[in-house]
View 1 (spheres, helix red, strand yellow):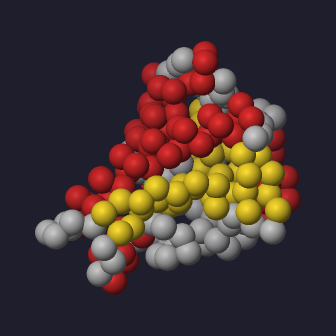
View 2: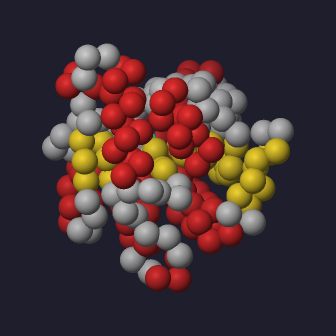
Length: 193
Ligand code: GAR
């Protein structure tokens, strides 16, 4: 993760209720001393950091990430605000059970600046997308989406904040359903339950 970890916090809060049905077993980041790690520590969730510059190349980092995540044997890996692309080693092991959240309505505005790109294009509706990670940039099968209106006078920060409210709700609702009921993917169509 790279942001302030509000999506993570929403999941940590949801997991505090046993009826939610999911538990966060570890939180990883690609940099130390970020708010997301502090949030995990406050919730007594184990954390780890794997920095790309500590490895000879991206492939070695990717292999180490897959190894480390594998130690926890997760049913689902959630990339919430994780701004790095995972590579082939990670995807071959976790590709069908890794989701990512993106602050735009895919397939529009992939990449690092979803809210900014949506504003610049002049769309009236944007939103957020939860998708199963594949080797593309925000291209994987879509698990859930929420629409968010673009308001007159929005700047990037205001729009992104409004998207993030919807994003947290989408993430908590969908991750819980995935864990409680399972999911399947057929020809890009994701079915829960
Ligand atoms: C979220 O809006 C997430 O979708 C976005 O960064 C924010 C992180 O917020 N990710 C991307 O744009 C990835 N392409 P958070 O750190 O408060 O959860």
